Length: 204
Ligand code: 5GP
Image (cartoon, rainbow, N blue to C red; front, side, top):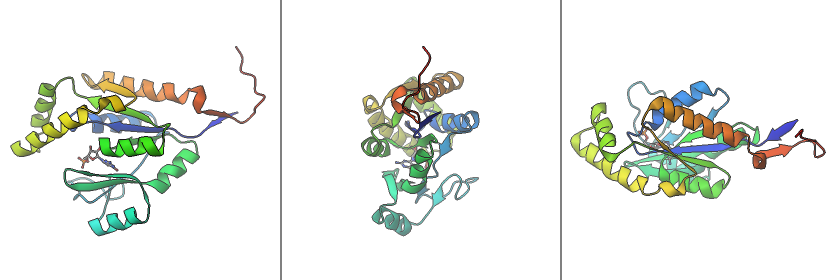
């Protein structure tokens, strides 16, 4: 009876804020959320599957996709190129499926212009000290890399007012509940609902 176009949820966060875990868990919890596979020029990490985690391409191929207007947004992050292919994203939204994108602040800004109705969510760690500790606990980054990520985190956090929602990730369970509440509330917004039947009477 009621039909709506899909909603685009864009989640950004500095590395160490817990965004990857939240997005992964949210996809397990909300099965109907579509997920976009980004294209990147960075090398696959161990365990990552091409076509599932990312589409790993050579820079030449990435630039050809850009020139062909195939990307909805793109950015350089830590020296590598990342982009969201436009066609699958458009198809999902047209079919009324909600899409969750895990992308950086530069890409989020581009999508805000392209899809003004997108919902932008920013996730932060409770403090810079906590963020630093989480980055150190990963043990995957060298000292110079940790410094670089912290500096970039400061620059990204300065942009938080451009987002619609801010989640302070003190506790994964609580942060998950907040993200799910945002998604569920946005799904109910009257402004997003297109009535198939103009004379539909909603009971009061
Ligand atoms: P990683 O390489 O560590 O998986 O991701 C590095 C950063 O790139 C993360 O902040 C992630 O959100 C961002 N990222 C991943 N895919 C895309 C994308 O398609 N576009 C943009 N702009 N950023 C992306």
